[in-house]
Amino acid sequence: MGVLNITPDSFSDGGQFLGLEDAIAQAKLLIAQGADVIDVGGESTRPGADRVTLAEEQGRVIPVIEAIKDLGVKISIDTMNPETAVLALEAGAHIVNDVSGGLANPSMFAAIAPFDCQYILGHWRGHSDVMDSRNGYSDVAREVIGELAEQVSIAVSAGISRSRIIVDPGIGFAKDVQQNWDLVARLDELEQLGLPILVGASRKRFLAAILDEANPGSVSNPRRDVATAVLTALLLQRSLWGVRVHNVEITADTIKVVSALKGAKS
Image (tube, rainbow, N blue to C red; front, side):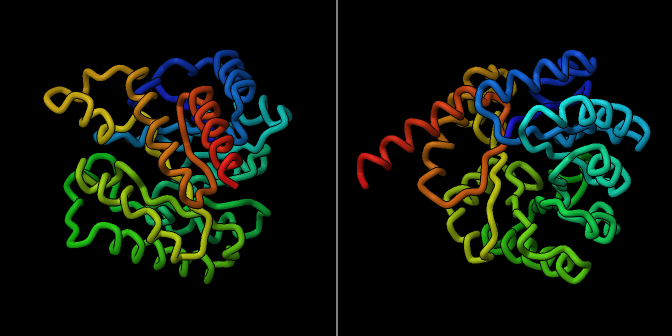
């Protein structure tokens, strides 16, 4: 899953693809590099990010989705807003990627239930301005699994079949550096939900923090991409639906290497 942020303030690529032609060119590049899904987002969810209005979000993402819908890959709309999700699905999106798992707006489930789309249900405990203060866990993996299971149950009750749901453990959302590593290390436990798993760890702070503990914010995107690729290679030993990444090329190459090794062993 290639990231296409149509935002001025995303943590690693904010402002690069605000123009429609720039966004289209980036989508084509991601596809050429091996993306199976393009994840289009119009609101940053980095810690401390400001919320945007529905009109702003929709004005950023809908024209892009309409412009790239015939490029031959699936399109995901990265939104917590049911109004935006519906418009995106009508414009040609195939997947709703809701990092809040329906908690930001409980109307999400009923809004998208009539559509023949997949739904990525993320683990979440609050918006960007408060998420870092909501990382109290006694057992991070167990609690993330339990909270995801509860939201999955609510989504199914609202009319979204389990066969349409993908779960995301919410790496970087309401979790500190060590909690993120603990969760990644126990990702296999998430398989008990019996649902496909998406991991979005690309370029995140918990990776940068081990590369430069004193000043993680100074770690460049290329260094973060290498760390992301190494983590991806390790995670591919497990059963994943996908990985959400900024650098598709290095991720696609990583997948090829891991696949070759697995093939040689079989």
